[in-house]
Image (tube, rainbow, N blue to C red; front, side, top):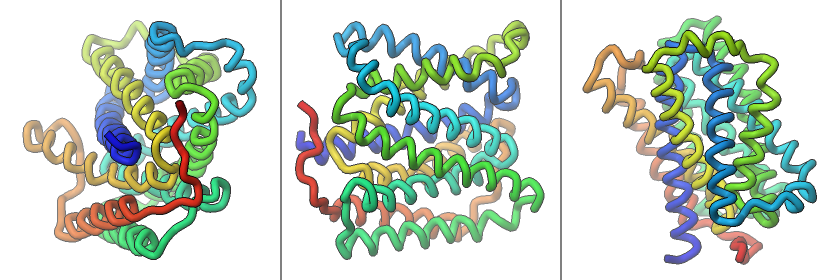
Length: 305
């Protein structure tokens, strides 16, 4: 398998799993506080990744010490993103929050050109333009269903979260040249669980029922695999290419949401699916695919032996 195909496959798997995580998160928010759910997700994920990184002999304490500051900064940005996005999902319909999530990936594309010397060719510009038009179409189809006060609060949280996500992604792209992806994720999850601990009501752990623990366990597994695939893809393709694939996440997520809704009408609250949603999805899909597969970079070697 070529580096390009391997990178695209990993990024697509990550996008698919992130979509599943958003659905699980929205369900989980109905039975527990966002802070508690995210903290458990990070704590359990760090334990899983610690044993995994040791099993494959990737764990290296000296390597962590040598890159402690940039890894810590990157971890803080991811924590900020996850927390703000979780509270945004709590204020918005799950599908509306998902629609605005690709803003961070667009910022990564711009940041890749500015900070990582990644450039656009004319076909990528056309693909990006189609993706933006697709997002705008989604926006126009969704905005009429929302309460203004709820929308403003939710979108403010998402806007800050997406800038944090962009910073995290660009930092991870640079760090994957030095640190194995599983170690990066383990460190991020561990730091997050430590920082969040003072703000978590541990007494509420006793109130979690079997369903709540099932959702937390599912989210942890999805999160570990999603970030593992996502960060690993940086070793094979450029940050901009990964983000262009991640822009597809709303289409994947919405498809999963409406599929679940057809099985259980009470599982999720979604806005009505309209022709504009479908048109926006098609434009987003075509634009992302076009931009990804015709991308060129000044840098040729993105793999790490």
